[in-house]
Amino acid sequence: MGFELEREVNDLFSPFYPYVASEVLEEYARMSGRVLEIGPYGPGVSIALAEKCPEMTFACGDEDDKALAYIRKCVRQRKMSQRIEILNIDKYSLLFDEGTFDLVIFRGGLFFWERQEKIMTEMNRVMKPGGLCAHGGGFGAGAPDALIESNLSKASALNSRLGKKRLSVDETEDIVKAAGLEENARIACAHGLWVFWNKG
Image (cartoon, rainbow, N blue to C red; front, side, top):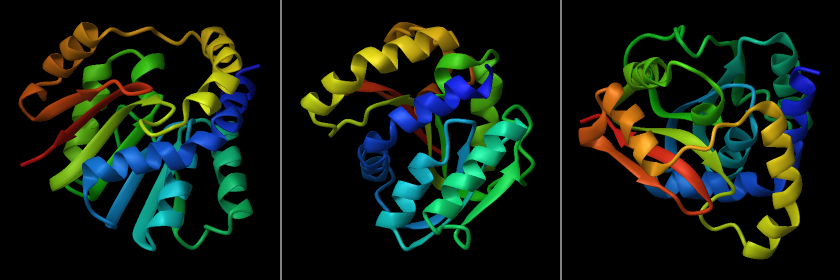
């Protein structure tokens, strides 16, 4: 089964990508820059951001071959191949130099993998000073309640089959502290759970 369940989650969440992108943009407070989206739950947020922000450029990817094939297909279908570069990316050891990206996103990354502090410190490493990291997931703060309700049951069932962790705010704060990022981080809980942080 493997990536097939992740693909189902990605497809199910397609109506919510614009709302997630808007929530991230509100935190980021800019319409340009170099963006990295990590993991098999891409490239929906990257595509939504690309449609909203013509001056942004993107890298997106995962280490799983099936996820990469899916990401490439989604990017081709939306005619975004010139703007979204697809790469084999190890979330625990990102292949980029320090300070490469203005915005780093890992949708779903907070709930499915171990060693969260390592993931977050790697995200922080490749973020430029003055940039933003967004690590978490959900439907997007501005998503309509009716749209959430119509998808909630199936989304919960799929995520449970994938082994999604149910994190409290306190548990999330502990992860942030373990990564040494508590001074610059904010936890947002509107229709999801996100950790946003800046690098001064």
